[in-house]
Length: 265
Image (tube, rainbow, N blue to C red; front, side, top):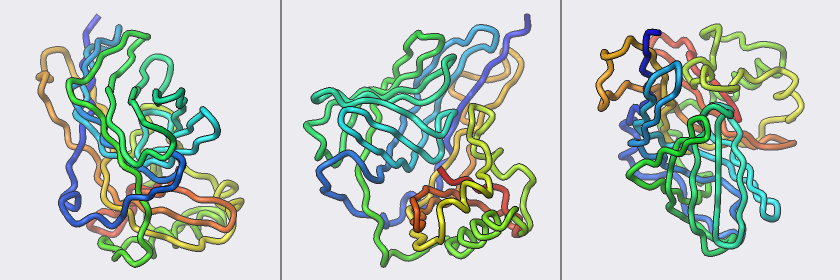
């Protein structure tokens, strides 16, 4: 059988070097917005596919803690757009993905008031753990209503949500607006009109920063070097407050104005 190699990678967005538009929050719970840096360097063999490599990813996540249980909705995501985990004393365990491949973070946090943490990052392929040599890191964020909308996409986010709630996105866009967010890895499927309509009126759209979705690629054996870095998909991230809930939304437009990426989690 022809062996295949599969690679995940991060495109570093230039805006990452700009001043942050968010501040640390001291709320006494893990619940809230976080920026999580997933490192590269994890590598594991997947039977029938070949060797999988990770190059890293910066994600915006909404953690929701209820007792010892923690849910993690991240943009972009590791496969399915929702992760899960638990906080047992000082031990925090978070996991994303599907049975065949999961991304996990294991960290020590002093208590639920933690505003930052670092921890081991690993891939679990068919249950076998493959650790990255570098740790994952995370810090809690509070959107600043006064922060400038550097990419100027807040209006476009509102328009896309309004059109979707009315039935379908009407502005020029790629037919599959979630493809570039990597839904081939899991269930990051397009938002439905029913979902967006149920959230009610959009009240606030706040710019969080630039992020990048990792792309998967398949090639014949021997054609992908172990240190290969494949550009990812850069996008702008926003925190959207609705009358009946909240979402993290990512959006990207091509130079010709066509929207080729839109996803809210």
